[in-house]
Amino acid sequence: MDISARTLKDAGAARTACAIAPVYPRKQLSGAAKQLDKRYRGIVSAAIAAGDIGGNAGDTLLLHTGDSKGVQRILLVGAGTRSKLDTAAIRKVIAAVVKGLRSCKAKDAILHAEELACDAVPMGALLEQLARTAEAASYQYTETLSKPRPGLATARLLVNCGEATKTAAANRALKLGKQIGEGINVARELGNLPGNICTPSYLANEARKLAKANSKLTTRILEEKQMRELGMGSFLSVSAGSEQPAKLIVMQYKGAAASKKPYVLVGKGITFDSGGISLKPGAKMDEMKFDMCGAASVFGTMNAVLAMNLPINVVALVAASENLPSGKATKPGDVVTSMSGQTIEILNTDAEGRLVLCDTLTYAERFKPQAVIDIATLTGACVVALGSHAHGMYANDDKLAEQLTAAGDSSHDRPWRMPLWDDYQKQIDSPFADIQNIGGPGGGSITAACFLARFTKKYKWAHLDIAGTAWDSAPKGATGRPVGMLSHYLLDRAGVKLG
Image (tube, one colour):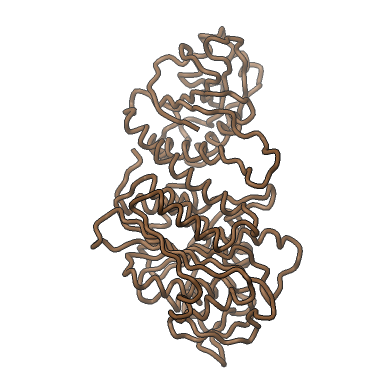
């Protein structure tokens, strides 16, 4: 979708397939709604008087004007009480706008957004969120469909941001939102691909393509032979049962001087997780193609970083493997040696994400990072704790946790900080190795993070458990989270403002 900003003085004088205007409770009209009402002989006030729309946030009503040469349709969108506009109300308005465009099939539209900005959501943030949501709404999965379903018909959206906002600043915010939305869609596409297509080798090829198209990005793929030479026995224990070779994908974005330390993103890329010898139940096992959504979010964020041309250095590490049972697969009770030298007793082969991540996190040390953030669909326990709304966040540095929380608030792609106390560490002590890969039934998400913490003592680190947020089961599909939060975090580090 093409999206841009303009300043329009009269909503009724514009030519468009659909004019979108806010309305408020108690029959209050926005300025744009009043102009449209005047131009079309009271069509808006009549609909409100009839009770067809109340003005609560997210309410919609589509009106047809019969004017093929002017405004063909008017989409009224409830914004709630104007004095109480906040982030929640704005998100409902944006979602309603996108849903309305999906249903009305208008080829182009004008959104009169000048009255939607508020103290909680200034115009720059509003426009970024609008463009991000609209771009994400344009995503349509088609790869393995013989007859793709129809997508969003609206090809062009013009945003009237009012005279108080400079058009250039508005377009910058829209552009950033669109670029982040495109990154979200990259993550969704990779997550939605079936496991027989999206293998570790497929992800490696996607990384090579990305580097080939961008001079600021270089890609290196570590094969199993190189991983073995580095001592990554933990990582390789996961791929042992699969015929698909594991890959450690290294993408380096150089947007600043080489002397500037990079931010490192680490993604869990288990392209299919059967549980290995600790086999999962058959019900919903198909959804384990989504176990690489941490890696997908890293790819999506890197796409956004490249598009935004951020003046920082970023390294993306993707730990890609399958987890399958076979005669060569790792067995419960086996002991392996990690790249760090720490030995690990594997009590459950379905706790494999932490096994590929720990070696990748050790590998991250060589980049002398400013901060490392790993993203992983790590534990069902996190779903029990937080459901599908918040990412579980663990950090060994308070400032990093605060920065990620702020990025989550500004993007409304929010984490919730969980405890990383030493009290939990004793649950993963092993009598036969330095550490065991599960910590018992209590605090499963916490003990998984405690496991990773043993490999991240040399830098500032945060772990995002996205098991509850990376995909939806009904309707089934990847969400692209937390690309929004990660992109805002890197925007903040680069000093880029939305306004």
